[in-house]
Amino acid sequence: MADMTYFDTTRRDQRPMPDNAISLRMAGNVLVATSLVVIALGLFREWFVYHFGEETVFQDMRHIALDAEQCLAAWYSSLTMVVCAGLLACITRMTYRRQQPDVGYWLVLTIVFIGLSLDESTSVHELALEPIQGALHTSGPFLFAWVIPALILVPAFGIFYLGFLRRLPAPYGMWFFLSGAVFVAGALGMEMVGGVTYEAYGATGLKYIMSFALEESLEIIAMTSFLVSLLSYVKYMYGRLELEL
Image 1 (cartoon, rainbow, N blue to C red):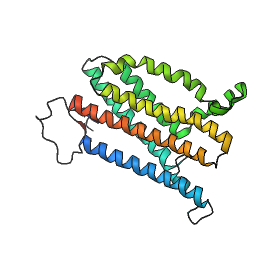
Image 2 (image 1 turned 120 degrees about the horizontal axis):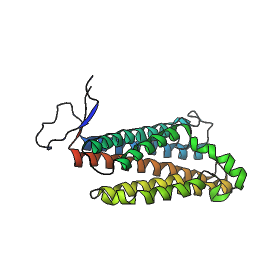
Image 3 (image 1 turned 30 degrees about the vertical axis):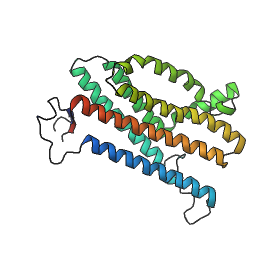
């Protein structure tokens, strides 16, 4: 069995592209199109159920919902995060082999995205809901109480990575930052908005539906943007990524 993953370290024009190769640009285009389809299906489901209810021949179409367990959007988000973790692991490896700086930052990002993927599949963060709610009697924007520790951890993580982002070649530092900002706006910001709208209008209220639909859409957009930025970074730094079996 050959080496599973490596980066081409020669100049891009020195090696011919294999006949069966998939370009990184093509992979990015497919990723964007797939993400738009997943979001569109989820938005259609929410519109349909809100207007026609669940007592139809299609029932609740839970499997394409944006805000449900074991649904297309959750699976797709988790898969996107796994692919991000795989690319980050490859970049970590090449950074180490070339004795370049910031190996630790790439490694931590790899671990973070593995954790995000696990959480997306298992909703581990929700274990913090009841203990914090019981202790602090949270409501309103803090109804989903896991956001309280997140409001401390996320800014600290961002400050820790500012230097790393500045050292990345343009435009990747800004691209990574914007992707992260959109993800936080969805996962954390819209979750707080969702707490307010849930208390005011209930789980079937239009404003709550709009808030969680926007939350999930922003998360998918952010993960797509970050994965595309990683593909672009790989192309910029190493020419291409090849898989050999």
